[in-house]
Length: 416
Image (cartoon, rainbow, N blue to C red):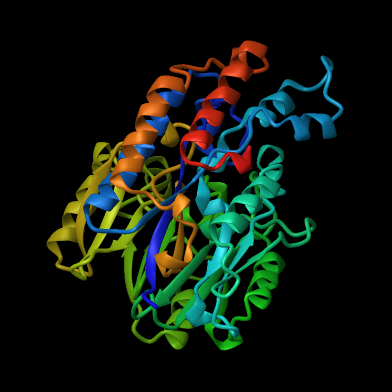
C-alpha cells in the first residue's frame, strides 16, 4: 500500500458571503457587509488545487454543503422575527475551510492500523456548529473502505472541537509512524478559545494513539487575543519541520522541548516577534500556509499574496530562503476572496495520509474534473452576493441550483 499525503480542499460554495459571523476572526469581522464574489472565490480555490496537482501532488476535494440550510432554519423555528445573523448562518459557506472538517490520524499512528477521522463539532460558532452532519456524510462516503478508514462522529458538544486547524503531525515521512500534537486554548480574553483540551484528548483516545506519541500543548493566550482563533494561524508543521511564530505557544520552550523529546529529528523554523509582529503574521496569514513535501523531497511554503504585500513578512521570507534552511521555496497563490473572510491556503485544505486507491475516486481531482468544475462554477455560481440579499428566495434558488449542478456533474447527487 502506497501512503501519500492528499490535500482535500473545500470547493467554495455558491452562497459565499461576508456576513461577519466569526467572533475573533479579524478579517471576517473587518469585511462584514462587503459584497462577495462567489464565482471568483471558487475559481481561485480551484486554481490553487490545480497548482498543487501540477507540482505532482495528490489532490482531493469536498463539496459545498446544502445552503441555505433548511434543517437548521427549521430547528430554529425561523420566522420574520429571527435575528438576521441566524438567517445568515444558514447561508454560510464556511465549510470551504476543510482544515476544520475533521482531525485525521494516519494509519501508522493508530492502534488498529487504519486511518482515523473525527468530524469536528465546531460548537463555538453557531454558523459552523450546523456543519458536522453534512460533513460527516461526505467523510463516510469518501472514506467508506472500513478496512482502511474509521470515521468517527463528533466529540460531545460540551467540548469545542475545531479539527485539524489545531493539530500537527511530525514524522520522518508521511507514511511512517508520527508524533501527533494537539494544540488547545484556554478561556479568557476578548475572544473565545475554540479548541478545548478535553476535545483533543477524546480524539486521541478514539484514534487509538500511543500516549507517548500524542502531545497536548497550550496555545498562547496572547495569540488568541491578537486574532489567532486557530493554531494554524500562528504555526504549521510538515514532516520534521515546525514553522511557528515566537509567540504561538503559551510555553514556547516547553512546547519545543516536549515535541523534541518525542520526535528528536524536529527542526524549528521560528519567526521572531521583532521581525514579524503577531499583527502582521495574522493579517498576512504567513502561517496559514500549506507547508508541502514536494516529489523531489524539497519543502515548499504556499502563502497567500498578502504575504508579499506586507513589507516585514516579505523581507523575512526572503531572508529565510537565503538561509538555506529546510523550506526551499515560497509559492504565492491568490485566494483573496477566502482571505477576506478569514481563511488562507491552509484553512482551505484537510490533510489525509492514505493510499489513493482506497478512497472513493469521485473525491479525487484530475485535470479533466477540474475543467468540468470550472465550467460549472463559471456558468452557475453567483457573480456577487451583497449580505443585504441574504434571505432572498430567488437567490436561494440560484444557490441550490448551482450546487445541484455540481453534484450531478460529479455523480454525487446522493449528497443532495
